[in-house]
Image (tube, rainbow, N blue to C red; front, side):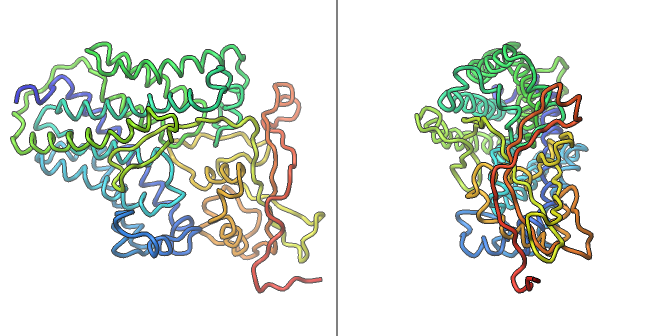
Length: 473
């Protein structure tokens, strides 16, 4: 079938595949370095306990057959290795069927991780990576030109990501309709970056322009993806510029980067296509069948988008083949942070020497400037932001976190920037307090060197010690 392929997109495919492999590599590296403390056998929400109550049909995963921390480590590091091989272009050295199987490996491994990751893996970019990765399996390699249907599926996914996010904003917080959300968002977003303070202090009229430009990019530009070139490339390029602006303004794991990767597939680079053989019949049949399946499954996210009760970041099947996306339908006006402290004193008093635990990414010491971590995902730091919004978010795991801190658990402490207690002298008590944070003004920054100003609000968790440890008088 001559219409089946689009030779002019061979370079777009190459760039897309290598960029996607980099995102896979970051995702697997994040899993490998953080899983023991979060979901390991002694994690905050252990996988074995989760598997006792969730059947395979609801959460397909290799770990349904057997789980151990060693096996999880093998899966995560194997994912890193395969992703690195894809970055290096191993798929181009294999026959078409071999390249497809190679791309299927990271998808299957990461699906196994996400489906047992529980609250730590409940973010929209997990499903977005899986959906993108599944479609990429059928994009082919150097033996054939890129299939038009697969390129369409990638644009359809990009359309749903952007348009869905735009709709959830317009239906959500009124500040999006009033163009005022960015008066607060840079200050209250989950994890600020090194430039977020400066973005917050941009003139308010410019904030209005930012919001209006966002609405245009998410509600109008996505339709241009389905127009002829070069309009489709211009639309994709505009989306990339918008996402890079978001990269500069905060830490959103790989959400912005995977969106950029999707947009790369819609760009048509000016390069002569190499000579390739015709697509084999079995390949055409497989692509047609998968495209038909994904288009059929798309009716659920479409119904969600047009619904007045639109939801964000929902998976409609356990394989995460087709999902709905969106973020920040509502924007917080005030930033709260949970500050965790410990003391070595025998009796916990208000005037005891309380020492603060420092997290890697979330705000803590008002004088410590935020760092850039994205696309790497600091999962505990993100969940601490949700905990500050409501203790209910932290109910399943915060108590165990405190226990691990009282034990000076090495795996847990590796998730932090610094523990104030030496390895052989754990704290006697740990407590948590809720503070209100706000960005300092230009004058306050010059006078104090602090980018944050914080005010005590209330107790989040009273001083707690390990059970069985006697309290000295």
